Length: 324
Image (cartoon, rainbow, N blue to C red; front, top):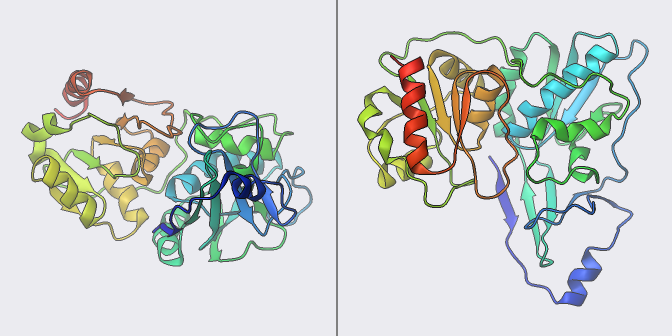
Protein backbone atom coordinates (compact mmCIF):
# COMPACT_ATOMS: atom_id res chain seq x y z
CA UNK A 1 0.00 0.00 0.00
CA UNK A 2 3.00 2.26 0.42
CA UNK A 3 5.79 2.47 -2.11
CA UNK A 4 9.11 4.24 -2.27
CA UNK A 5 9.08 6.42 -5.35
CA UNK A 6 12.78 7.10 -5.45
CA UNK A 7 15.73 5.62 -3.68
CA UNK A 8 18.76 7.24 -2.15
CA UNK A 9 20.56 9.81 -4.18
CA UNK A 10 23.89 10.97 -2.84
CA UNK A 11 24.45 14.70 -2.91
CA UNK A 12 27.41 16.91 -2.23
CA UNK A 13 27.34 18.82 1.09
CA UNK A 14 26.70 22.06 -0.80
CA UNK A 15 23.76 20.60 -2.73
CA UNK A 16 22.35 18.99 0.40
CA UNK A 17 22.55 22.27 2.29
CA UNK A 18 20.84 24.09 -0.55
CA UNK A 19 18.04 21.48 -0.79
CA UNK A 20 17.26 21.78 2.92
CA UNK A 21 16.82 25.57 2.83
CA UNK A 22 13.28 26.88 3.47
CA UNK A 23 11.14 26.81 0.32
CA UNK A 24 7.98 28.95 0.11
CA UNK A 25 6.24 26.15 -1.83
CA UNK A 26 6.86 23.49 0.79
CA UNK A 27 5.75 22.99 4.38
CA UNK A 28 8.65 21.98 6.58
CA UNK A 29 9.45 20.32 9.89
CA UNK A 30 12.59 21.96 11.26
CA UNK A 31 12.48 21.71 15.04
CA UNK A 32 15.58 21.83 17.18
CA UNK A 33 14.84 18.35 18.50
CA UNK A 34 15.44 16.16 15.49
CA UNK A 35 15.38 12.36 15.23
CA UNK A 36 18.80 10.78 14.67
CA UNK A 37 17.95 9.25 11.28
CA UNK A 38 15.21 11.53 9.98
CA UNK A 39 15.99 15.23 10.14
CA UNK A 40 13.17 16.90 8.26
CA UNK A 41 9.84 16.16 6.64
CA UNK A 42 8.11 18.29 4.07
CA UNK A 43 4.79 18.29 2.25
CA UNK A 44 5.29 19.43 -1.35
CA UNK A 45 2.76 22.04 -2.42
CA UNK A 46 1.63 23.10 1.05
CA UNK A 47 2.78 25.91 3.32
CA UNK A 48 2.15 27.03 6.88
CA UNK A 49 1.80 25.28 10.22
CA UNK A 50 -1.63 23.72 9.87
CA UNK A 51 -2.85 25.27 13.15
CA UNK A 52 -6.62 25.80 12.97
CA UNK A 53 -9.16 27.78 15.01
CA UNK A 54 -11.89 26.11 17.07
CA UNK A 55 -14.74 25.01 14.78
CA UNK A 56 -17.79 27.24 15.10
CA UNK A 57 -21.23 27.59 13.59
CA UNK A 58 -23.18 24.87 11.86
CA UNK A 59 -20.74 24.16 9.06
CA UNK A 60 -19.85 20.46 8.71
CA UNK A 61 -16.66 19.42 10.49
CA UNK A 62 -14.40 17.55 8.08
CA UNK A 63 -10.96 16.12 8.79
CA UNK A 64 -8.60 15.20 5.95
CA UNK A 65 -5.60 12.89 6.32
CA UNK A 66 -3.30 10.68 4.30
CA UNK A 67 -0.60 8.61 5.96
CA UNK A 68 -0.57 4.92 6.63
CA UNK A 69 -3.17 2.86 8.49
CA UNK A 70 -1.59 3.63 11.86
CA UNK A 71 -1.61 7.38 11.19
CA UNK A 72 -5.31 7.32 10.32
CA UNK A 73 -6.33 5.21 13.32
CA UNK A 74 -4.27 7.29 15.74
CA UNK A 75 -5.76 10.53 14.39
CA UNK A 76 -9.29 9.56 15.42
CA UNK A 77 -9.04 10.35 19.17
CA UNK A 78 -7.88 13.87 18.30
CA UNK A 79 -10.74 14.28 15.83
CA UNK A 80 -13.26 13.16 18.45
CA UNK A 81 -11.82 15.58 21.02
CA UNK A 82 -12.02 18.51 18.58
CA UNK A 83 -15.58 17.59 17.66
CA UNK A 84 -16.59 17.35 21.33
CA UNK A 85 -15.00 20.72 22.07
CA UNK A 86 -17.20 22.29 19.40
CA UNK A 87 -20.38 20.62 20.61
CA UNK A 88 -20.47 17.97 17.90
CA UNK A 89 -20.71 14.23 18.32
CA UNK A 90 -19.99 13.37 14.68
CA UNK A 91 -17.68 14.49 11.90
CA UNK A 92 -16.78 13.59 8.32
CA UNK A 93 -13.45 11.98 7.48
CA UNK A 94 -11.63 12.36 4.17
CA UNK A 95 -8.76 10.08 3.16
CA UNK A 96 -6.34 11.91 0.92
CA UNK A 97 -4.85 9.31 -1.39
CA UNK A 98 -1.48 9.09 -3.14
CA UNK A 99 0.14 11.81 -1.03
CA UNK A 100 3.91 12.10 -1.42
CA UNK A 101 6.08 13.20 1.48
CA UNK A 102 9.79 13.89 1.43
CA UNK A 103 12.14 12.97 4.24
CA UNK A 104 15.40 14.86 4.37
CA UNK A 105 17.79 12.68 6.30
CA UNK A 106 20.72 13.91 8.36
CA UNK A 107 23.17 13.12 5.54
CA UNK A 108 21.16 15.21 3.05
CA UNK A 109 19.61 12.24 1.26
CA UNK A 110 16.05 12.90 0.08
CA UNK A 111 13.64 9.96 0.33
CA UNK A 112 10.24 10.34 -1.32
CA UNK A 113 7.38 8.13 -0.11
CA UNK A 114 3.89 7.69 -1.43
CA UNK A 115 1.44 7.09 1.39
CA UNK A 116 -1.93 5.33 1.18
CA UNK A 117 -3.11 4.81 -2.40
CA UNK A 118 -6.72 4.50 -3.55
CA UNK A 119 -6.78 0.71 -3.23
CA UNK A 120 -5.47 0.88 0.33
CA UNK A 121 -7.93 3.63 1.22
CA UNK A 122 -10.82 1.54 -0.09
CA UNK A 123 -9.70 -1.31 2.19
CA UNK A 124 -9.65 1.02 5.19
CA UNK A 125 -12.91 2.82 4.42
CA UNK A 126 -15.29 0.10 5.77
CA UNK A 127 -13.66 0.30 9.21
CA UNK A 128 -14.26 4.05 9.35
CA UNK A 129 -17.84 3.68 8.15
CA UNK A 130 -18.61 1.47 11.14
CA UNK A 131 -17.63 4.14 13.65
CA UNK A 132 -20.68 5.81 15.22
CA UNK A 133 -18.92 9.18 15.43
CA UNK A 134 -18.10 9.38 11.69
CA UNK A 135 -20.93 10.74 9.55
CA UNK A 136 -19.36 10.07 6.15
CA UNK A 137 -16.12 8.90 4.55
CA UNK A 138 -14.70 10.19 1.28
CA UNK A 139 -11.42 9.80 -0.56
CA UNK A 140 -9.54 11.60 -3.32
CA UNK A 141 -6.03 12.94 -4.00
CA UNK A 142 -7.11 16.46 -2.93
CA UNK A 143 -7.91 18.00 0.45
CA UNK A 144 -11.54 19.24 0.48
CA UNK A 145 -12.04 22.99 0.86
CA UNK A 146 -12.59 23.92 4.49
CA UNK A 147 -11.34 20.60 5.87
CA UNK A 148 -8.91 20.38 8.79
CA UNK A 149 -5.70 19.11 7.17
CA UNK A 150 -4.21 16.63 9.62
CA UNK A 151 -1.21 15.98 7.39
CA UNK A 152 0.36 19.09 8.90
CA UNK A 153 1.29 17.06 11.98
CA UNK A 154 4.35 16.12 9.94
CA UNK A 155 5.67 19.67 9.86
CA UNK A 156 5.07 20.85 13.43
CA UNK A 157 8.28 22.00 15.11
CA UNK A 158 7.34 21.30 18.74
CA UNK A 159 7.22 17.52 18.52
CA UNK A 160 10.02 15.52 16.89
CA UNK A 161 8.66 12.61 14.87
CA UNK A 162 10.66 10.19 16.95
CA UNK A 163 9.96 8.34 20.19
CA UNK A 164 6.61 9.98 21.00
CA UNK A 165 3.07 8.64 21.21
CA UNK A 166 1.73 9.14 17.72
CA UNK A 167 -1.82 10.27 18.76
CA UNK A 168 -0.24 13.25 20.52
CA UNK A 169 1.43 14.45 17.33
CA UNK A 170 -1.83 16.15 16.37
CA UNK A 171 -2.18 18.29 19.51
CA UNK A 172 0.00 21.19 18.21
CA UNK A 173 -2.55 21.71 15.43
CA UNK A 174 -5.12 22.78 18.06
CA UNK A 175 -3.27 24.61 20.87
CA UNK A 176 -6.64 25.83 22.18
CA UNK A 177 -7.84 22.27 22.92
CA UNK A 178 -8.26 22.09 26.71
CA UNK A 179 -9.44 18.47 26.88
CA UNK A 180 -7.07 16.22 24.93
CA UNK A 181 -8.31 12.70 24.17
CA UNK A 182 -8.16 9.94 26.77
CA UNK A 183 -5.95 7.40 25.04
CA UNK A 184 -6.60 4.75 27.70
CA UNK A 185 -10.19 4.33 26.48
CA UNK A 186 -11.16 2.41 23.33
CA UNK A 187 -11.99 4.44 20.23
CA UNK A 188 -12.71 1.80 17.58
CA UNK A 189 -16.17 0.28 17.75
CA UNK A 190 -18.58 -1.63 15.52
CA UNK A 191 -16.83 -4.95 16.00
CA UNK A 192 -18.56 -8.21 15.14
CA UNK A 193 -17.51 -11.44 16.74
CA UNK A 194 -16.69 -14.25 14.31
CA UNK A 195 -15.91 -17.93 14.87
CA UNK A 196 -12.18 -18.58 14.54
CA UNK A 197 -12.25 -22.12 15.90
CA UNK A 198 -9.20 -22.90 18.01
CA UNK A 199 -7.46 -19.67 17.09
CA UNK A 200 -6.83 -17.49 20.14
CA UNK A 201 -3.77 -15.47 19.12
CA UNK A 202 -3.35 -12.98 16.28
CA UNK A 203 0.26 -12.60 15.15
CA UNK A 204 1.61 -10.03 12.70
CA UNK A 205 5.18 -9.20 11.79
CA UNK A 206 6.45 -6.89 9.07
CA UNK A 207 9.98 -5.96 8.09
CA UNK A 208 9.27 -2.24 8.49
CA UNK A 209 10.01 -1.88 12.22
CA UNK A 210 12.32 -4.75 13.21
CA UNK A 211 14.13 -5.46 16.45
CA UNK A 212 17.57 -6.94 15.92
CA UNK A 213 18.24 -10.23 17.68
CA UNK A 214 14.66 -10.90 18.72
CA UNK A 215 13.18 -14.33 17.97
CA UNK A 216 9.58 -15.53 17.95
CA UNK A 217 10.63 -19.19 17.94
CA UNK A 218 9.29 -19.60 21.48
CA UNK A 219 5.74 -19.38 20.07
CA UNK A 220 6.05 -22.65 18.12
CA UNK A 221 4.38 -24.85 20.80
CA UNK A 222 1.30 -22.62 20.44
CA UNK A 223 1.15 -22.54 16.64
CA UNK A 224 -2.26 -24.29 16.52
CA UNK A 225 -3.69 -21.32 18.43
CA UNK A 226 -2.07 -18.69 16.18
CA UNK A 227 -3.56 -16.92 13.19
CA UNK A 228 -1.08 -14.88 11.16
CA UNK A 229 -2.37 -11.59 9.74
CA UNK A 230 -0.52 -9.77 7.00
CA UNK A 231 0.49 -10.09 3.38
CA UNK A 232 1.41 -13.37 1.73
CA UNK A 233 5.01 -12.17 1.65
CA UNK A 234 5.05 -11.39 5.38
CA UNK A 235 3.55 -14.80 6.14
CA UNK A 236 6.11 -16.54 3.94
CA UNK A 237 8.96 -14.64 5.59
CA UNK A 238 7.72 -15.60 9.06
CA UNK A 239 7.44 -19.30 8.18
CA UNK A 240 10.90 -19.25 6.61
CA UNK A 241 12.38 -17.72 9.76
CA UNK A 242 10.40 -19.67 12.36
CA UNK A 243 7.66 -22.29 11.84
CA UNK A 244 4.51 -23.01 9.80
CA UNK A 245 1.44 -21.11 10.96
CA UNK A 246 -2.05 -20.59 9.54
CA UNK A 247 -2.53 -17.40 7.57
CA UNK A 248 -5.69 -15.36 6.99
CA UNK A 249 -5.94 -12.74 4.29
CA UNK A 250 -8.25 -9.93 5.33
CA UNK A 251 -11.07 -8.79 3.06
CA UNK A 252 -10.66 -5.22 4.36
CA UNK A 253 -9.83 -3.52 7.65
CA UNK A 254 -13.36 -3.95 8.99
CA UNK A 255 -12.64 -7.67 8.63
CA UNK A 256 -9.40 -7.12 10.59
CA UNK A 257 -11.47 -5.36 13.27
CA UNK A 258 -13.72 -8.42 13.54
CA UNK A 259 -10.81 -10.86 13.65
CA UNK A 260 -8.95 -8.94 16.33
CA UNK A 261 -12.09 -8.58 18.44
CA UNK A 262 -12.60 -12.36 18.23
CA UNK A 263 -9.18 -13.47 19.42
CA UNK A 264 -7.85 -13.26 22.96
CA UNK A 265 -4.31 -11.94 22.44
CA UNK A 266 -2.57 -9.88 19.76
CA UNK A 267 1.20 -10.02 19.27
CA UNK A 268 3.35 -8.17 16.78
CA UNK A 269 5.42 -5.19 15.87
CA UNK A 270 4.43 -1.63 15.11
CA UNK A 271 1.91 -2.14 12.29
CA UNK A 272 -1.60 -1.14 11.27
CA UNK A 273 -2.89 -4.33 12.88
CA UNK A 274 -1.33 -3.46 16.22
CA UNK A 275 -2.79 0.03 15.98
CA UNK A 276 -6.27 -1.46 15.59
CA UNK A 277 -5.65 -3.75 18.58
CA UNK A 278 -4.49 -0.72 20.56
CA UNK A 279 -7.59 1.25 19.60
CA UNK A 280 -9.82 -1.59 20.84
CA UNK A 281 -7.72 -2.16 24.02
CA UNK A 282 -7.64 -5.92 23.59
CA UNK A 283 -4.80 -7.79 25.36
CA UNK A 284 -1.70 -7.06 23.30
CA UNK A 285 2.06 -7.48 23.24
CA UNK A 286 4.12 -4.99 21.24
CA UNK A 287 7.57 -5.77 19.88
CA UNK A 288 9.35 -2.44 20.36
CA UNK A 289 11.37 -1.50 17.24
CA UNK A 290 14.99 -0.47 17.20
CA UNK A 291 14.10 2.73 15.38
CA UNK A 292 11.02 4.93 15.30
CA UNK A 293 9.01 3.76 18.32
CA UNK A 294 5.89 5.92 18.16
CA UNK A 295 3.24 3.39 19.18
CA UNK A 296 2.95 3.71 22.96
CA UNK A 297 0.28 1.40 24.43
CA UNK A 298 -2.04 2.91 27.02
CA UNK A 299 -4.94 1.33 28.91
CA UNK A 300 -6.11 -2.24 29.08
CA UNK A 301 -3.80 -5.26 29.25
CA UNK A 302 -0.51 -4.76 27.41
CA UNK A 303 3.23 -5.31 27.67
CA UNK A 304 6.30 -4.34 25.68
CA UNK A 305 8.69 -6.92 24.23
CA UNK A 306 12.36 -5.96 24.08
CA UNK A 307 14.39 -9.16 24.17
CA UNK A 308 13.58 -12.82 23.70
CA UNK A 309 14.12 -14.28 27.19
CA UNK A 310 11.92 -11.79 29.02
CA UNK A 311 9.36 -12.03 26.20
CA UNK A 312 8.93 -15.72 26.96
CA UNK A 313 7.96 -14.88 30.53
CA UNK A 314 5.63 -12.11 29.42
CA UNK A 315 3.92 -14.29 26.83
CA UNK A 316 3.46 -17.15 29.33
CA UNK A 317 1.78 -14.80 31.79
CA UNK A 318 -0.56 -13.37 29.15
CA UNK A 319 -1.34 -16.80 27.70
CA UNK A 320 -2.21 -18.18 31.13
CA UNK A 321 -4.47 -15.22 31.85
CA UNK A 322 -6.25 -14.73 28.54
CA UNK A 323 -5.92 -17.90 26.43
CA UNK A 324 -6.79 -20.75 28.81
